[in-house]
Amino acid sequence: MVAPFLDPFSPAMFPYSFSIDFLIRGTRYPRAVVLLLGLPSLAVIFLYHIRLLRAHIQLQPEPKDITSSITQRLDQLARVYKEHAVFDAHHLDLGPSVNLFNYTARLDNASRDAFTSTTSGQPLPKLQPLIASARSAVDLHSGLAWTSQDIPQRIITSAPNILDMPPEFVGWKQLNPDWAIQRFDEKAMDTWVETNLATPTDSGLDKTVVLHIYNQLPRRTLKFDTFRYLMIFLKGGVYADPDTSSVLPVAEWGRKGTTKDMTDFSVLQLAADAQNVTHGISSDSPPTSINKAPPAFIVAMETVTTRDDREGGHLAQYAFASARGHPIFLDLLQHIVEVSRAMAELKALGDLKHVYSDSVVLTWTGAEFWSSAVWRYLWARWGFDFRRLHGINHPVRVGDVLILPSEAFRASSANPSQQESTEACLWHGFHPC
Image 1: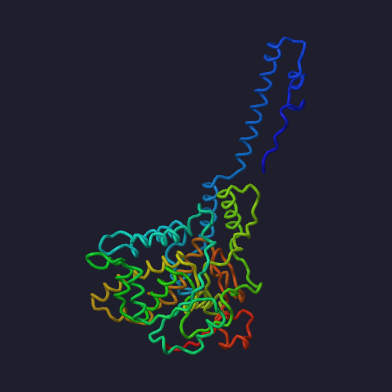
Image 2: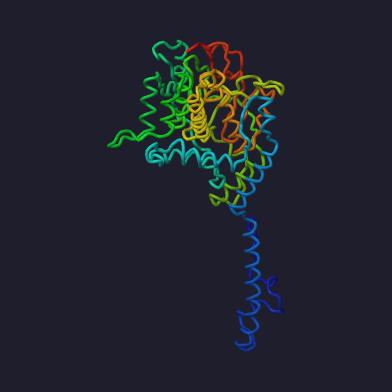
């Protein structure tokens, strides 16, 4: 609030028996006497105004102070995280810590590792804007400008044979007529990844580390998983397995009025303050306005969660949506690089049992690893403990992420007119691909 400035020429502001108005209009005293008596009074008034101005300035928080306050609040929310307790209860490996400092360091490490050239050791220039976008999403000083990123109108799928897909997949185009549909078989996947993650040079292709890893993955499932992360990270849009169908337009997901905002209120209030200071807004901004923008990331629960459910907290990996450059994917891809290196060492030692097992796939590129990465972001960036979702049967908004309930992706039929659940968004046929 701006401090009121009093009129310096009013009698109330003048500490002596005569006013400034009287001094200006004239007096029977000589001019030199008037100035001698009046100037000290003007000096007192001037100093008083300086004091008021300083008090007003002190009421305006500095950007660094707001950033520090948000960081302290996020650290406070992260203290309840216990690595072994989360793993034992839900079989999710979020790592030893979920604080924002360590999470940001991981993203920085990914930019220096997964997306660097295998020959020069430098990041490819064409990928720098994308990495900067992912990095800005966790920069508290940016005023949350990243949360306004839109999900592109693009639906991507991948299958060994795109000519033999379940017929229900056409529902995506029927309910989203303005959205582009892109289908990739394994050959098209390999071509796309090479085109986007390598740069031609006189001596051949200058490949990124993640492209080199992708080419070395020992199972088809690993490549299909990695492709979907790369595609959405670089381009954005909706990824959907070929045995799915849209039963509600994507633009309407979570828009039926049942979504509950579970973002920590203190974080939202501080974020609103950060926006005001960044943009020079003096009036208070309602903290809930931060979450009025469309979500930048959409995911659905795999199952109905209960406190004693070991699968509670697992998220559907067969369909999701995101703006391009989301930090979740940068974290995911760095994890794939690190695990791939470890598996290569096991393979060199002759331990093929672990390298090719189904359980390893789940934690290498699959659903368990996917769920851990999403929750790691929400806990580090927004201070959100996913265990708060136990028993929730409606959409939840946390920061820039929309979390749909399990029934959202479990429509009983691919026909939109036959849906029983009010939250149904997607039909999943669970066909082998």
